[in-house]
Amino acid sequence: TTGMFTFDPGYGSTANCKSEISFVDGKKGELVYYGHPIEELVEKYKFVDVIKLLIGNGYIFPTKEESDQFERELVRRSYIHEGLRKIIDAFPDGAHPMANLSSSVSALSTFYYDHIDMEYEAEYQTMARRIIAKTPTLAAFAYRSSVGSPFVYPDADRGYVENFLYMLRAYPHGKLKEEISPIEVSALDTIFMLHADHGQNASTATVRNVASTGVHPYAALSAGLSALWGKAHGGANESVMDQLEMIGDVKNVDRYIAKAKDKNDSFRLMGFGHRVYKSYDPRARILRKLKDDLDQKGVKMNQRLVEIAEKIEEVATQDEYFLSRSLYPNVDFYSGIILTALKIPKSMFTPIFAIGRMPGWCGQVLELLQEPNVKITRPRQMYVGK
Ligand code: SDX
Image 1 (cartoon, rainbow, N blue to C red):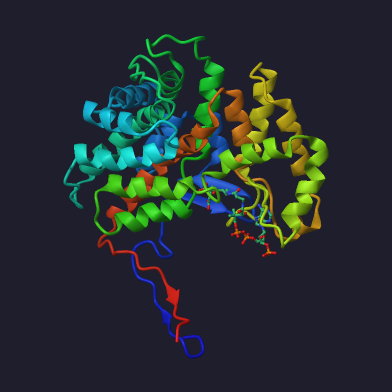
Image 2: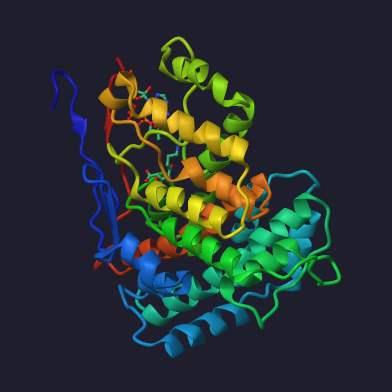
């Protein structure tokens, strides 16, 4: 009770929920999935191993054979029902791929109206494996529909990450202008892994909130996609690129830093600041190194934008306004520069975040639904009315 108003106690499984899946140490700038530091996972594993880790209660494949088998099964399940393809095909040209993706994930529940019984672990695993297998296809189809290009179906002989790049890039007759390189696949694999889970961020909390009502899990995942799209959240990677293009030249950086500090100006540095990290986002650190590694391996970055981004980081991380508010680069600050160098269209940056985050969302739904008695979420409010 504060003064004359009584605090409405929050109920439900997600208000201050408990989770084993990931921990974000905002002070130290550390991120772990099931106790594994993100740096170790990036170094030693592939994204498909992290998928299994997140939906398999922390299970790590003991052998490469088991990991490869799991990957083949995912790609085998990456095809979608022709009826769903027709729905995606009907979306208007020019629609944002995130609008197409969130709508098609919701529509997926009409094709798989599994009765997800709260008791059966096997059903959750099927639900999770299916949506994780199909999300790259839905994302690639969402893009091709947005640009009016015929769809390119999955190629079951390719790996999980390579298959996505194939569906995004191939000509309608299925041929590629140039083969997809292992360097590109490895870079995108790392990007997916870095986005896989991140505690109770806005979209994950949305997924858990919606799932706590007992709705079909795919409807909850569709709600998560809508929350992720916002430029304060997963949409920031696309906004960072818009901002770097708008700044245009390294000599304009000081002017925009001043705008970001001006309280009368709504301008904010996109890709900077974080609700939890009051230190350098460890994912941004990995991406900054990946940018340099790729450039050395011949995946050419847009040097003009790299210089602007690095100048922003150099100036802002020595500026009292940003230091006093613990504002540092976050996961979105360098990801767009790398994705552009991988020839991925800007409108696909947030769908790529979504492909990475899908296993985390599924793991969070599984964790929620396995609670002994799932309570519907009821966030707190302080009544300030009359
Ligand atoms: C993601 O939660 C997650 O885990 C999210 C995510 C994930 O993996 O799921 O990590 C992914 O969403 C990363 C964040 C991507 N968004 C952006 O990069 C958008 C730009 N950043 C901001 O809009 C902002 O930093 C937020 C939204 C991320 C956080 O906003 P808050 O909670 O309002 O920030 P804050 O409370 O820490 O702000 C403290 C101060 C305020 O100024 P004062 O009122 O104290 O004077 O810092 C200022 C803010 O105005 N501030 C900024 C700023 N971010 C905060 N000033 C200029 N530029 C910025 N980017």
